[in-house]
Structures are given as structure tokens and as C-alpha cells.
Length: 150
Image (cartoon, rainbow, N blue to C red; front, top):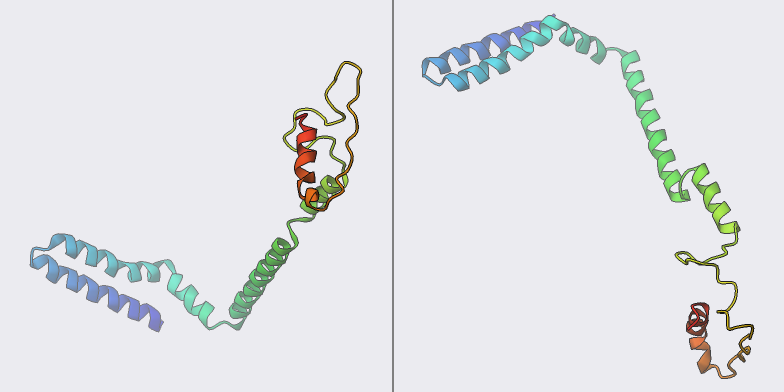
């Protein structure tokens, strides 16, 4: 009851200010003030103010807001944990399948790397492993070059 009276008084005061502003030939500003002044009156007439007053003083409504907050907190926590673990259960299973499946070709390769290039029936002589420790640094590069037939 008090909220409705206050909103009506605010609307009447705002409309009075709009009339004075219009009297001073500032019609655009007066129309804007009148629009703002009519908002509280519209809220009273639609029943929003009464609903807000009933909600503000209702313990059940506040308990409902608490439950909504708890629900949001649980949702945010589970999403955070899920992101730290690496995705959803379906994504983790797919990643585990990809890791366990042997790859026949290197990613981006056009054909399987099964052997050397065809040399007319002759197989190339196998190379010896380098004995010196300094040559070990180039073994990875050497393997890549062999794979591409260079």
C-alpha cells in the first residue's frame, strides 16, 4: 500500500517537472522526463510493485533465491572441474582410443612408411649405428631423412 502511494507521488512529481520543462520550450526534454515519470505508475498498475513487495518480505521467496544460487554454484563448480580434467567423458574416451591405436602413417603423410624406395630388386645395405656419442644428436634427423627417401 505504501509502495503504491510512493510510486504514484513520484509519477505526479515527474509529470509536474515535465510540464514546467515544456513551458520553457524544451519539449524534447519534457517528453523524456514524462516518459521516466510514467514508469513507476505503470509498474503499480501492472502489479509488479505488489509482487516485488510480496517477494521481498517472503521467507519462502528468499529460500528459493538461495536454492537457485546453490544450483548455479554447483553448475559452475562442475564445469570448472570438467575443464581441468580435459573435457567430457566422451572426449576422454575418444582421446584414449586414439592414443591406443597404432598409427601406420605419420600425421600429414600421403603414404605409409613401410620400407625404402624401390631400387629394382636390390635392397640397400643396412647402416651401422654410430659409435660416437656426438653422432647421437643427428640420429633423429637421419631417421627423418631416411623416412622420406633422402
